[in-house]
Image 1: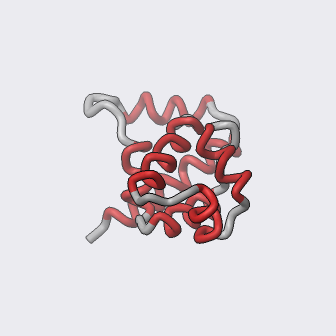
Image 2: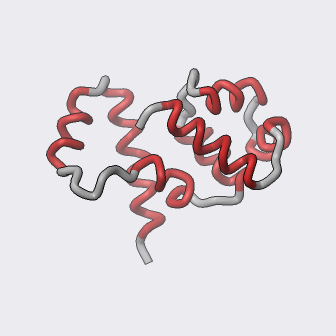
Length: 108
């Protein structure tokens, strides 16, 4: 998952709800400049910030991260695990946190 993909997704959700960056930033409790950098893909949000933005948009973790986490249906799990192994440890840990939150939201 690239930072710009997540940023574009946040921007699309924000615009679909008719929110300005200022309104979303205020509702999520993040600085408007931080939200702007996230939407442009120049700043990766922490998991708490990402979840606060999701709440500000009125979506859960699953709906928020779903399009970002989805890949081609034939993408083998081994390839995903290999990509995680190649990431810096801090990035892999963040991705795993997001996956866990996504999976927790997917359970009935």
